[in-house]
Length: 118
Image (cartoon, rainbow, N blue to C red):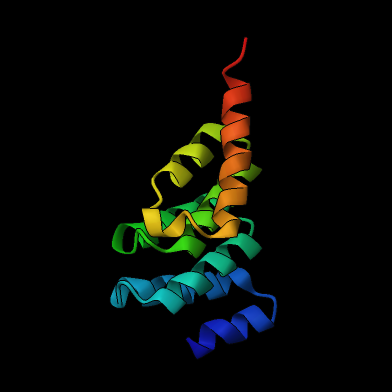
């Protein structure tokens, strides 16, 4: 973890991503390593890889609001309103009370509804 953080601090996100990817491969479900992996991938301009890491987090922790909102944000950045809506729609009930979720869900619902209009 320390080496990856050093790479991040030195603005070397690709090297950091490699370190964190190796860590999550060897220690699955390590939340902090996944969070740093996602940060590294985003900073290295690899949003598709970041989305995959976030989906991995949601497979072992579907209640992770941070991972779900981050994934929806990345999907939104690439203009995929349907994916955003589906990601948020899959959130467990306990996550839905959070104001951040509600704000993003309302936006996604509006976008999904407007994209289906003729």
